[in-house]
Length: 199
Image (cartoon, rainbow, N blue to C red; front, side, top):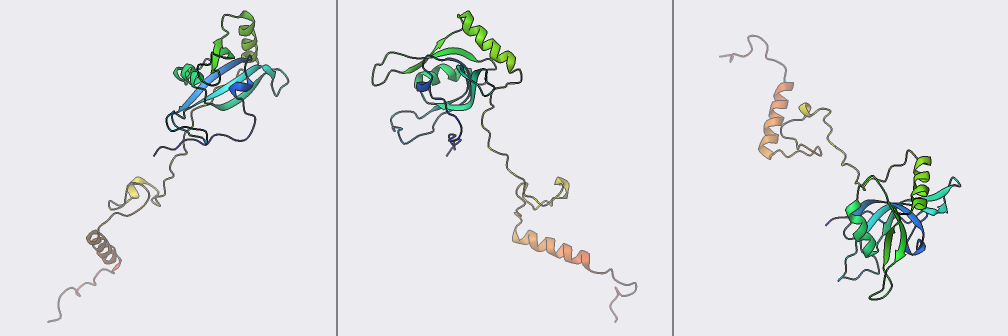
């Protein structure tokens, strides 16, 4: 069974419903195919697009225009569809958050391109120029498995030991042969003249 990253609960969260009408720069960071919530239905996907988002209509922590929130989990279907092909792209999408026409239930959230608006482009470029070291978030990766073998080097590891985890996989006969060899190596060498029978 695959496991997903838990959805962040701390810090400031930006949801599409809070951003309607706002000018945004959005980097698509990751797609999670299945992450159900208490509201999920078994007949509909519970997928997520993970984004870095700069709200250019809000003030950032430095007092300048552009509030950055990293690794936001958005579940709106049309936004997922428009951003999923852009996962890992270095350049952001510049768009206004909007709402489409409702066919069933609430109107869907959509992204309306702002790249043809010179003022919007200038605002986005101003934020990027004041944050030259910004880089979009990388996809989540689980921590690497820790090698637990007590052998310091691979060549020190005996042939009967497992290649990972330090767990022996030798059979009973192999273990008895190894113990006999180790025991014989600890015996003192025979004294000269003592290797002949006394009769």
